[in-house]
Length: 242
Image 1: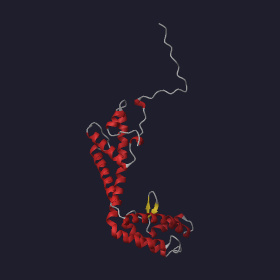
Image 2: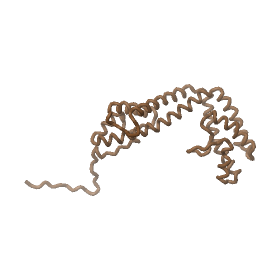
Image 3: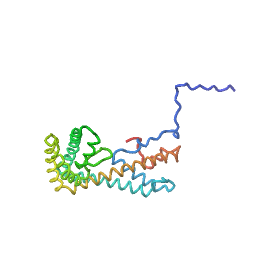
Image 4: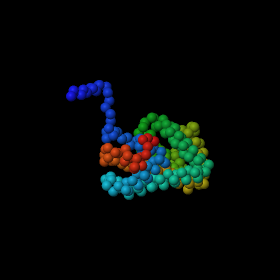
């Protein structure tokens, strides 16, 4: 029998990738939008509850199920609160945005008045009622009641006594908006607080939920190298991308 000849593989040819070698990208499997993410979290928690062998040393199934439920509830609270917003509470948000923009200019005024010395500028900012924030430097508190007090007791008096009080973002800008802000908070404070709280709860739960789901994806790939795609689907990861 003649020897069977083999055709050499050219240098540029690519070899097929087996299922076991396929790359799993959790970023494509884990939804970014709140609704689909809550659904995947719920399905994964249910699947985990049926698989007692599956263990993450830093997160139990019960804790994950609670986390998924809390995230779903936070979304519901946020939607309900947003639906109940009045024109007054929408105006509150507009004023918050204007305060944030005003601070950007105000800090430039203070920096200019401090001789463009960053250390001197930073030392003065707390006297205007500003607090340090990890992602945004000095800013007003996100809590509206605390923001109101900081504006009334510190920022407005400090701006009124500064050399730049008469400028566009000086005393007039802050006093006019503060007066409206206080009136609106008196009318809609309860609702405004509820919206702020639900958003904070949702964002915290979302980060943790995504972290656990990413670990689940990698763990399933490690435990089922030949059939992990089917396992992912059975755990609620129904789409290749969102």
